[in-house]
Length: 386
Image (cartoon, rainbow, N blue to C red; front, side, top):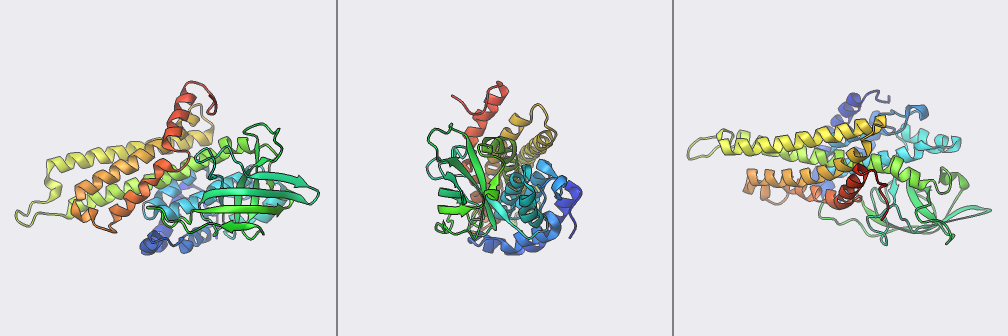
């Protein structure tokens, strides 16, 4: 196994896994089975450390790498794309301020394709406001203790570790000052909720998690106590937004491909006239092509701007996921109309794409939150505030 040295190389490897591993299993994944084979194949292809900087042995391909890889995976299987994407986001968090021990015990294994990690940030009580955790962190002579509840944990009960956000138990701690810890998947005190049963993204294993006084060593704290607000907006949010934007951009492209292929091969039996020859259908397909392509340009420009620390990175990143959410739903819905009854049948590819695409708006940060953040960023205001 070698580490990819360019985004193009990473995309080529991911595309091979998507075609040879994900595609044959896509119906099984859509039935609710976590895509173990595809995730392991991506790790075996040297992509486990995609989001880890080169300074710690990773590929160092940043936001551009995660957006491009998730897009090529999302064209085939959105669940696989997001499962791998959340591993990449958690990897970026781990690798942002690692101690020597964290690098040796966790990051080296991630880069070697031997460790799968993921995020556990959302909570039932705070909903989409994942930056306001209620999970409690206390410290004593024995180390750390974590107690609380998480929701919608992608790769739930499947990952080797979980990046968990916590707030200090001290009632005097300032709001928004919270910490992040790495919880091993085999730690005592973890109880998983029922299997994920969404209308789409069915292979995510997106489950609830209860942490009952989970004991951890001090080395499981990421950064310093109170650092997590920095992690959220400097690491979690950019990588999370690009993982989701890439995934749902892939869904939009897959829907466009379905409509294009259908119009190209379909002809009316009574006239022999091909649908591809109808000017109205040509026009409507052209509109969809432009919508997908301009959304792609926004996503990849935002990733590039984010990687370089450009002046418009913030509104670019927040807009990208919001625009992709709209694009994926609208293009898939329009593609189903173009294809007609064949696309509307149960278990057609477009049916799956439409169910998967609908999750984009409601996955935090939601589209409404992102539109507000974009406006605040354009006005020079902090994202969080009155």
